[in-house]
Amino acid sequence: MIGVVGEALIDLVVAESEPSRPVAHPGGSPMNVAVTLGRLESPVAFLGRLSGDAFGELLRGHVQASGVDLRWAADALEPTSLAVVSVAPGGGADYSFHVHRTADWQWSATELPAAPGFDAVHAGSLALALEPGGPVVADWLEGLSGSTTISLDPNVRPELLGDRDRYRSRLDRWLGFADLVKISDEDLAWVRPGCDAAEVARGWVARGRRLVVVTHGGNGSQVFGNGFEFTVAAHTVDIVDTVGAGDSFSGGLLHWLDRADRLRPEQLARLTGGEAREAVEFASAVAAATCSRAGANPPYRSELAAAYQASVPGA
Image (cartoon, rainbow, N blue to C red; front, side):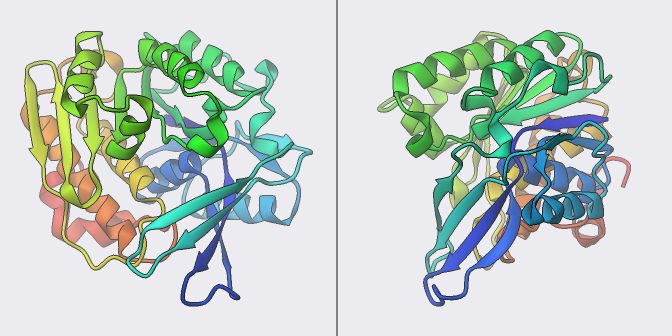
């Protein structure tokens, strides 16, 4: 089973064409990854702090309907976090966050399982970065590393992170125990302004990361690992919006690795360049399908099987 730890919030999507009619979509980067995995039929559990308010109940129903296990989710007294998503006519999305004293950031060590037996855990985004809970989650992940593959997507939100150098120091710690890193070019440019993405990724591989993927939106992805380096083109699609695209990419990547028996640490160490290419091509297809509809609404396995069956081990 794959565990995903982090925030589950509401994306209040405001289209530029109809700003008076916002629509509430379940969201939050880690939750989107868990939903993607569930819809692709990988065994997955979401570890989040879910509020008892109306939005919290909406989130619970959403993840469970997508086949996600909530046995390790924590019941939170605080309200649900809210992200206001402004969508431009071309599909691009800008975010503003309402997160003061909300449920997602209040982790305590007793709320995280000591030995859950996961093959991999995916983390990143705000729940790992924000206090007081972020350091608690980081300590938990570091304790699992070695026996469990740790997947990381920083999913940087600069408006909430404060000092760049302080965040970079935290990221360096996370990179020390992560096996798999997916990061967007925009995030990398904020973390390492002026640096070449390929050089940064090669440095992370040299430090022991098994697979690093730098995504460039419609311009595809750069892929780095032990003994291989290449680019993968993005899939062409009519874009409705890009909300959740990177999260569904991460979910697709983890799903492929799981089905190919390349997910656990000792298996990921044997990943070949050819396998990595297939994995990223499939992840790109999942992200493209998500971009073809409104909100963070990743595809179900049945929706991809006809077109991508040959690329999905165990399909």
